[in-house]
Length: 203
Image (tube, rainbow, N blue to C red; front, side, top):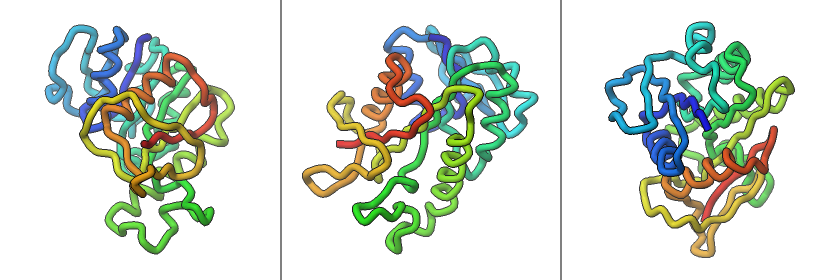
């Protein structure tokens, strides 16, 4: 596949790029600072700002899918959607947040009293983007929420998938490594199972 990746230089984005290259896909990293992306076979880095849809759309055009791992508080969901529309690319994959997943009592995590205030603005913006995507009918989209904790770790390939409920492991923890998250992203890109839906991944 030809993948255009917005936010490819971030912690999660770089893992997704690595997994895509490992599987032989071609990646265009659309980032503010291309010099931050180390050159690799199959990877090209170009300067682009997704908050300016008309300017970034030509950089996305011609790809099979647009992957976004940008920060929601920085890149409004409407700008992302508009950029994809203008590009003519028929598919968008969004690296989501865990805040809009449901706790066992049915309350979304971001609305629970224990949710950290420091992450609230990003979580609310992520939920808003998901809600905007749920109204989109003119192109295909998928939104993948991680578990509550996503951090660098092992690439095991062993994890569970869910839909709108927070996944919690037998140890009582809700977590996924960035490496395994990237596997779930590429699995979905290669064999789509969640068209116009959100899903989640965890141990």
